[in-house]
Length: 328
Image (cartoon, rainbow, N blue to C red; front, side):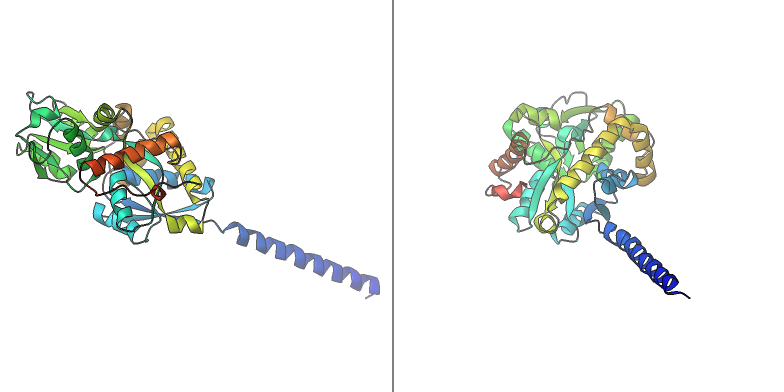
């Protein structure tokens, strides 16, 4: 072999080695997407639907992260997973997050979630037309949820003591419905999707209280059923995570409105909701997913107002400091 041939072969081998090296390194670099672990539920509520849609539509990948869903069988376990750091994110009641923050959990509220419009109180009694008409009567309601706190704050603004003037029967949403069906209570508080299921099966039942309308009445502004929170340590590891997650959640909110039929199918397949229930909840305007950055002044005010009212109502001794709401 001539010197020229040897030099050509050596050059070819070097070029091949460089090209091969480049091919190997590209995917190794590209796969380093941050993982965001979220608390979800195995219950037939709309909380898990948010994450199911995000994953199914690839909105996490679109915005540069990988969604890791951790499903829990109960509300208590759902919050505990976030509190212990097993997950980075949850969407939950703002006043419950207020409690976690005061217990030392590094909560940072990064955005809004669902409005209070899906919080409703049903009755079968035509003589009961408002919360005031429940005085001396029984209301089935989950006393451990933020919905109880919202209802108690509204009642207090109307001069009613929820628990004294209105007799409270502690029950989760499904049990509350069953209690009302069996005529063991006079009214029951539920949220979506149970509200739409009830109206489909019992069109004669009446709604005497809607959370969004009630909150607007006493505060003059919107309130939130659930908001989006991320742990401070997760943000420290990935400072871009809040904005990436908010962008993906905004895509989910748009998808619910623009692809309702497909979203309804996902709800049926993943949550086993009857076909048409999600569509009915959205059409009724009870289910309203609104994602806004929590650090915007107007949005921050609506969230902190709920916390201030929770303190005034006696749920907590003092307000959390301003760090509870994330600021870029």
